[in-house]
Length: 259
Ligand code: NAD
Image 1 (tube, protein in one colour):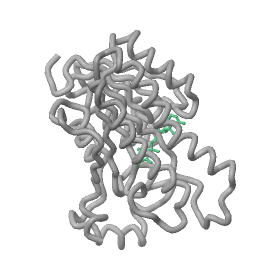
Image 2 (cartoon, helix red, strand yellow; image 1 turned 60 degrees about the horizontal axis):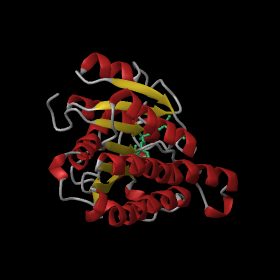
Image 3 (cartoon, protein in one colour; image 1 turned 30 degrees about the vertical axis):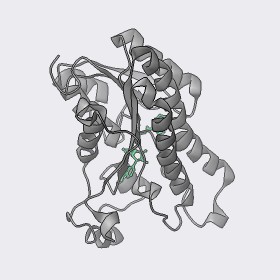
Image 4 (spheres, protein in one colour; image 1 turned 45 degrees about the vertical axis):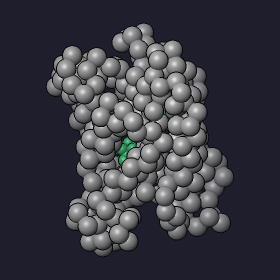
């Protein structure tokens, strides 16, 4: 199959909704077969499931894997599914994430904090681990981790999320150092404010007064769309980024570096 990822296989975690859904679709348009790995099948923003949409709208194939990324056995099983269904694993996108608990550090519930770390940070670790084992056998591959601008800057009342996203950044750098010799590239994307259920429902920014003030600080004058992240993920996943590893790419309309 033609395309930047023609004939390849990608696992995208958290791909039922939002950014992961856009990545799955964009990769499929470029020829990759997709394993949609998520705890839920239906998108948070409604519409048909990601795998149905990919199968209907592209020439690639997609399957759904019920997967909680905080469970290493689930993640391992998802990678096995990719190999069983499509014959290999070439690209792993560790995208699944949640945003809360938020608030003053003195008020954060330890269990909720641990749950967030288990999903956001440990999920990316287990995903990278399972992918690296398989990609080593394949002779290489590309791992793309989804952090946040909250993995670069500290934000008040967001310490659990920042902790998890900063961890993903350093996880990426250490794995790039370790896995380069196996032909495995590892990179990280730091999205700014992207319009998904996370920013309309979980932490309402889009459509709020304070969000509007934030938007005015963005040089490109708008919040991001999920496909803005998907296009960057496509670059990092594909051979266009053949000499890029251990890199972090901020995709935020220019907000952080001009603040
Ligand atoms: P979203 O809530 O729209 O989608 C997240 C998806 O992850 C959902 O389908 C959800 O079911 C899935 N998920 C949650 N927990 C999971 C688990 N334990 N195992 C497997 N899947 C799980 O959110 P989004 O905005 O698309 O966020 C995607 C990623 O991008 C997250 O890591 C998020 O932190 C990051 N991010 C988002 C923004 C933004 O502004 N939206 C900004 C920076 C970073």
